[in-house]
Amino acid sequence: MSTPLLVQALAALSAPALAGAAALGLRGRRERAAAAAVAARLRARAAELEERCAELERTASCDPLTGVWNYRHLQLTLDREIERARRAEHTDQADGPRPLAVLMLAIAGFDAVVAEHGRGRAGTILRDLAQRLAMEIRRADTLGRYSGEEFLVVLPDTGAEGAAQVAERLVWSVRRHLLLDWSSGTRAPRPAHGNGLTAAVGIAVLPDDGTHAAVLLRAADTALAEARAAGGDCSRTSAPPRDRPATGLRASADSGTEDGPTAERDRSEKPGSLSPCAGGDPLAQPVASHTPATVAVPRDVLS
Image (tube, rainbow, N blue to C red):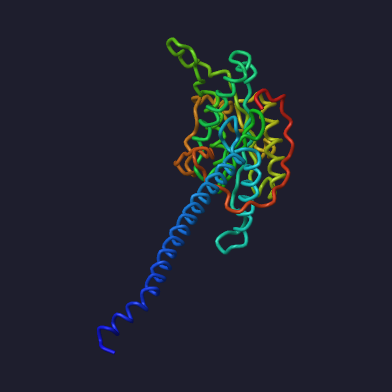
């Protein structure tokens, strides 16, 4: 057979094979495109689920009224910080647990705010005040709504002296905070003697007042009751007065000093809001929480 005839025969025989290969290639491209589209949809769905999960985490940890951390987050954070403080006791760098302070702050005077502005506006005032208090602590600290007009502050690596300074600053902030004004005219000047609100703070410190969450909260609750009995606008520690001096604005007033917060020397000067809505440090490893001590408070007007 001549060469031209052989070439024609081979071309005729290979045509179906070439057509099949082309069809297979087209099918493969379509399958790859379909797989890429499915992968893109799965990635978009995964991103959506992650966003919803993050939103649920924020919702589960954020108090809906004030925007700061809620009771559940406070429990988990306190347990985590206590475990971290106690773990330092077994290292070579520490002779005992790292210091940890707990402040229980109760605001008085909101009955008059509710009577004057109503519950809706009073809730907005409480939110504004809570966000202001969150700016008075470090980013490493945690402030959350405990119940009603009560807030809990967890202060890692803070002893009794530093906790007293923070408590004094928070009490001063509550007393001097400029409340929201809804009047359309000229804004009223700041009252000469405060805004009608006062705060009482109870202080408990690990390990002096206990090494468990329930014990620390009970000690802070006892100290808070003493601060309330003293008339508020002050802070008290859980230790007897003969062991630890009283601190706060009332003590400053009794000594003849000017009304205002004391400069804190042993703590970071980096304030920051720990509101989860503003972006906070999420809990890394939640642990089983203890049941906090029940706090005896007046009827909640905003809860």
